[in-house]
Image 1 (spheres, one colour):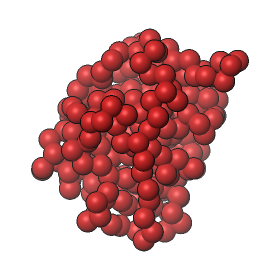
Image 2 (cartoon, rainbow, N blue to C red):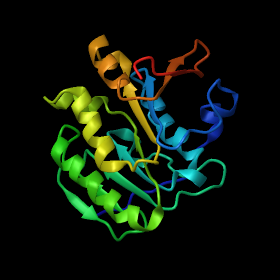
Image 3 (cartoon, helix red, strand yellow):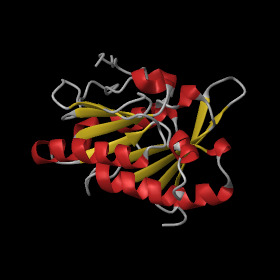
Length: 214
């Protein structure tokens, strides 16, 4: 298996400190990051979780495209207890649990069963020694578009398999790729939503709100 390189994120890319969002996320929070279909936004769920690296425990990151080399380390110098990656575009299933960054690769984003199993394997490997296990999905949209399962069923299975009770989940979804029914179904599983828009000057604007469906 070839090695995936992870480098620290640039917090200035998202201006998180200047955005109207809470400075920290609560244990057990499920944050839906609703963003436009823009590959530059796909690191945002990781960046939100990385702010809480000191309290998030171990983290599992799910990549679904070009962000497979996403910057997953904390921008503030803190580190997750452990970091594992599920890459869903490998073309085959490959497992390397004993690497410095444990990685499981699955064939395609729409392979829900194998992705769920991969999340469970990493969760079980982390939970005994790392306390909370948090989960971040760069964008669940490619997964949903390739799957015949209901969106809420897919997300619920990922949360159950890859996130412990006190862990944090940051779930990216590209709202321009889905209808209102899908967004409502996903929002029903979230405790908080961060709406993301790109302004005319090219910078991102974030709006935080508790999920109205909770």
